[in-house]
Every structure is written in structure tokens, then in C-alpha cells.
Length: 433
Image 1: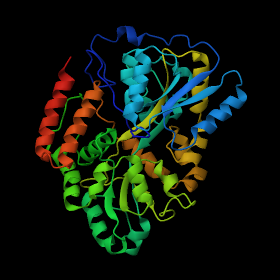
Image 2: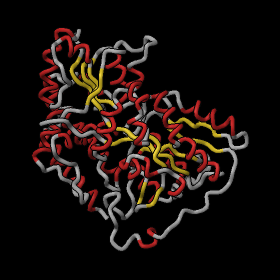
Image 3: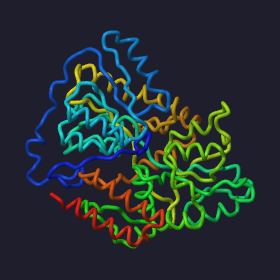
Image 4: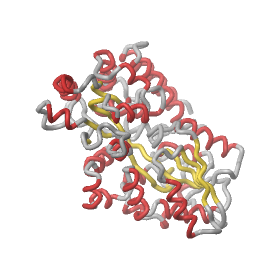
């Protein structure tokens, strides 16, 4: 999830269903289990609806396709940078049965909602190399074990840190725990030029759901358990939220951190205003740019997120590509998705943007690892990443999480009260059939 990348986005209610995505529904899937994809037919011009392409990659990929498909041109439709607004516009398009959007670049947590509402087409599994892709990424594309989107990009949060400053302070390894992170900041402070200690995504939007879920998981708890039941009464959940709350209180997270989304935090890190930054892979290429846009190029490294007693757990993010039920020329749409999600094109995408591919082999490619030393860290992070709460009524759930977490971070509520209220809200959401 990103606000820009996946992470992010919110998913609306699913009618009477209130189950964990991916779990079997008792007696409700007999017709779905035998369903086969409908014919994806028609060749001709299509559109790709996506969030604002801050990477600058997509139009070049479209140009490559368009040059060899003169009668099947793809036009890029850029939606707002905010994932919440992207989702809203995609839903409005579907509810009016408009053919304006053909291919949808969707957040990984939207699959179930879009499929359940009949807004996207089921895809033929045998036309995608799913066995070569990361398991976690593939799981985000299915609804009741049927493929409704193609894995496109995956994502997991990582810890960006100023290696030059840690080296100067005699710190030889990045922090593995939250206490070590705070201790490192105290040692680094004299050489940090007033830089803040830690940043993430703490504005009230989907990024906060990711950061909150990560903190809870990194303390050894879960927002919901394996059965989809809220689990925030666990004392460890409070320890996770307390890390964020107390970090604001003691200045570990600078006051302006409450306004950070992905881009605000990225700019702060690149301007040398943060020692540590929780961020997605896309920041790597931008922060290492040598065109003068980054003050920290060559001065930082990447490590796993820290946790309460050891390495933490990242939130799983990413994007998938789906075909609108109401789009035209779905045959072209399928072929275009296969092109954009091919291993060869995903390698190019990685090289140009540092965004995370879904093919496992690319993480072990010596050429790529040399160019992007963080790839082994990212592969491990993605492999152990925790999905955002897989509640079918996800829109209601993420709104509740954002409201309560933000209240705790801003001091409107105590951590204990915020978690108690969130437990009540999520219990109602999950049980409201």
C-alpha cells in the first residue's frame, strides 16, 4: 500500500459477506469453484487507468507496446496520486458501467471487492507464469481461489538509514529493535545536523493502516487472527502502537511526521532531514539520484524494519492488473497485461524505477543485485510480510484503523482506549452480516 504504490487504497463493503479474504465460505462457493473465465474477446484501442505515475516509467512501456500494435493502442489515464481517490474513481466508473477504463492498476487489497461486485473479469490462470512469481503476490490476485487480476508489482516496507552518519558514530550495523533505533539516533544526533530520528507514513490515510499494522505485527501481535477475528486485546498490540505514540511524544518522530505520506517522507529523507525512514522500495532509485535532487545519494543503505525484540514484519503492498467488466477490446487488454507483467518487462521496470517485481528469480539475479543491493533484504521482507487485515469489508476496517490510530498518535486518545475502541469497531464490521 502505498499511497502512490500500493500500498494503499481502501476497499468498500461486500454486501452480506464479512469473511476473511481467502477463507472458504461454507456452502457459498460451489458455483464459483467450477466457474471458468468468460471469453475475453475483441481487439482494438484500450485504456490503462492507474494512479499518477510518479516513476515516469509507464508511458515508455506503453510506447513500446504501441509501436508494435498500431491497431491496439493503449492510452494512459492517470488518476489522482491518492489511492483512496483512485479507488473511488474506479468504483464510480464501474457503477455507471462506463467503458472509459479497460485495464485497472489496482491495489492488492481491492481484488476481493472488485471481484465480488462483478466489476472485473476472471482471468485465465494458464496464461500467466504464476509458478514463477512470489507466492504472497499471487495470493493477492485471487478471490475464492479464482484469478481476477495479474500480479504486477509487490511491495514491503524497509528501513532506509543514513549509513554515513551511523558509520561516523561508530555504529557498525543497522538497528534490529526499536530500542536500538532510538539509541542509534542519540549517538548520531551530534553529526546529524538537526535531522529527525525516524519517519514513516502517519497522515490519516491508507499509509497509516500499513504503518499501524506493521507496528502491531512487529511487536508480535496481529490486527486480526487467522480466523479473521479482531485480536487487538493482546498486550503486544498495545506495545506496537505505543512505539509509535511514544516516539511522537519523545521526539523520535518529528512533529511534522504526522503529516507524512510517502512523498512527504521521501522528500524529507532526501533532503537530509531524517536519519531513519520506513519506506517502500521505490524510494531507493530516487534517493540515489545523482542529478542534484537528493542530498543523500550514496550515503544511505537499507535494512529490515526493526521490531520490539528483533527484526520486525513489513506490511505487504503492491499492485495488480485487472480487466474492467465494462471495458471494450478485452482480448487486447489480456495481451497487454501479459506484456506488462512478463518477466522481461518487469526486469526493465525494476531497473528504471527500483519498484519491486513479482518474479522470484529477479531477486537473485547478480546483475540486478549489484545495481540494487537491497534486493535480498526486500525478498526476505516480502516473504515474511503481513497482509493488511484481510477483512472483506475492508473499507470500513481501514477507516476504523486510521481513525483510532490517528487519535492515539495525536493524543486525542490513549493507546489503550484507541485499541479498545478499534477492537469494538472491527468486531462489529466482521460480524455485521
